[in-house]
Image (cartoon, rainbow over all chains, first blue to last red; front, side, top):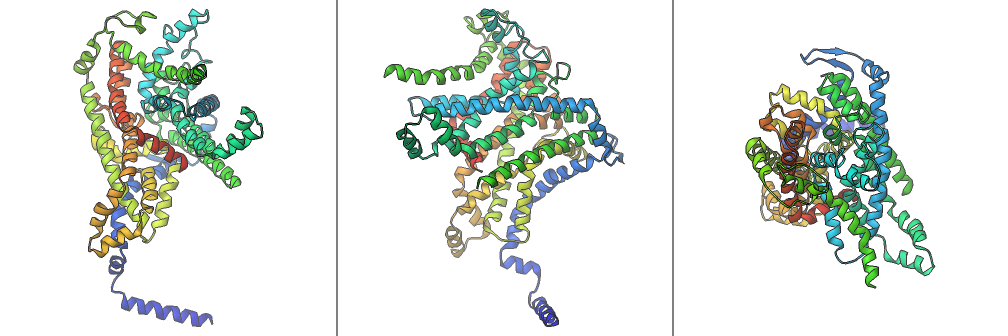
Length: 311
Length: 268
């Protein structure tokens, strides 16, 4: 039986080899040659400038790469050095603290604003359009403006002194810098998240709310037991998006604080940039990049698992 | 009734004021070159002058940076859309060896943080001699996996009959793509185009790494360098306004595509 099958297969393949003139002609006939031609430019760009560098980044984390081009195998030395480097732990702690303040704040504000914007009142489109303005603004522009708003004699401290508080050193005190940056990130992000949540809210069938209303549920109960469960996928997407965004915070820190004061806003990506392009320690910087990758991966996997449990 | 309507507007209006205030600050400070800063006086300018704009556009490289940013953004938009749409058409409508594996590799790469690829990309373009050049800035940003994914999802929805009919009429593959598929893709091309433009216009980290000389800066980088230099607050703010206005115009003209793009990313 087995030999029978084997001979059959060999005969078939020899026949096809004889009949089919060439692989190329066959591909031309069924259109897959042209398909390969269509994807070729994209694939080349992707392999050279995305996939290749991503793999190279992981490899670099295992070597010592000097600016002169000499490469020295390091094994896991870079990671060992990383995990005993207080600067790295500081960066991780800064990033985590920033995330823990910025993400809940942004999500709560976005959710509240989505609720407010879901009502059909006159001029609601104008409000929605206005809230999106910070999203389209570059973080550098925003950073330049907010730096003045937060400055010692800026408008925020002027307002505070009018009610007898302050002055607050928003960006120049180690305790305040991360909350201040988080507050600004709410301003830059809520317009985007709000739109996603708004789309989710508007997709909830009206009957649910009406049924709950008939049952005499309070506004809070309706929100908690009807709206929120229905909104879960959108809400979840927003949380993951914000987690990843805030773990990669860089631009605003580079412009507004330069990682200071005394490294109290020295984030993980700032660490990577600093080690890479200031000290030209490419291997060590790449090790930090791998850590960032692992964290991102864990968040993504967590999201997938929760989604699977949902469905 | 009227009071209730007012009450509904109150929180929305307060948040709107808080949202717009920084933009107001930017504009107001930019038209007060040469005047001492004082609060609240500086926020209510009585005598307006545009010296800061004249200084920014004449004295420094701002005009050059505008040109660089326009080139970086517009060329990238066109090329990203061309490469992504042709490839997406093949992935959506044709079966060929390795298509699934290739496509999912692209999607998996979305999970790899951009920052991990930053150093190798930098080393790559320096080796190619493209550091501090426009091609070096543009080319590494062209393989956009998100654009490919969203284009493919869209093209899958185009009926096969449309394509088959054109083929029966004797249209070649390229003609089918340019005359049948691409016109159908207008909405998704507009949405993606707007977002790719936005990413490039506001991009900072890659230009920071890939350019060296102030001549080749884009606006975000230039704005940062101005702020680090000792120019007056008014000039910095004027440069900020100049950076913001083009993207504001794009937003005002194509607002619905922005909204579509955001909700599309939400649904995946």
